[in-house]
Image 1 (tube, rainbow, N blue to C red):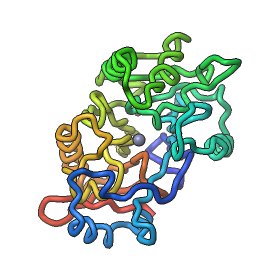
Image 2 (image 1 turned 45 degrees about the vertical axis):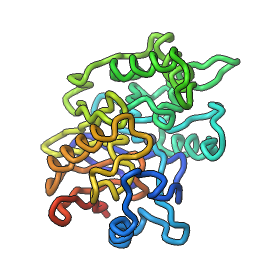
Image 3 (image 1 turned 180 degrees about the vertical axis):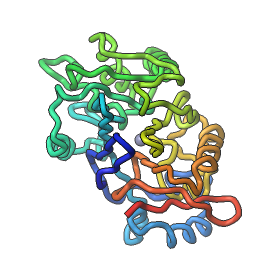
Image 4 (image 1 turned 30 degrees about the horizontal axis):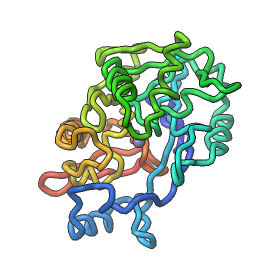
Length: 290
Ligand SMILES: [Zn+2]
């Protein structure tokens, strides 16, 4: 992704993994093959690999530099977490791309997780001498308190998949005294605030970035693919509450449609950043900023 400038704020991307990933029929329970094929033929070409029939899905972290802070939004899958293939991504690209961004671990002032799934919290911690410790020694990690409580409860009750996420990626941060457990009204500074978009997880939130009359939104997993702009009701197999996720998505897309708000979805492939436009009678279109 090219560097995005929103007034005094800059946003760059650290990619962990990209390329063709899932078939739409496996991702969206409501998928309709005929409707889907028509959409896929007219989406931005980077979004779909027709040869393999798979959607292109990227895993990335956004680096948000405000005048006062360096914030990482969502931290991919990380290293040494023990996830089974194909989720055992090579850790080298993320580390190399982090270095290329000109940062050291010490420079990061805040880490923010839009939700507490394994692919948004991985680099929160690293395994050092057999213990999970915060990767960024000077950072405060911001979690929504109700999202945290949900995953704490689920991990303690057992049976969540992958069950290690809270234990490896979240609890050690709290134990190190580096967590800020916040509610939806939280504002880091006058450029960085939250919008609740529940459904994918119980307290999923998007990040609003505003400066000098410009606005961008990091949309986390409120949508995973541009097909969900065309068909906002197509929630994924990974959504906690598919109906609520669809409602959050449609409401959000309606609010930003035909505005200059820059959209930054975590899983959209490069060039990633885009705008929402109307499509047909009841849908939306995702168009890259090129
Ligand atoms: Zn995700």
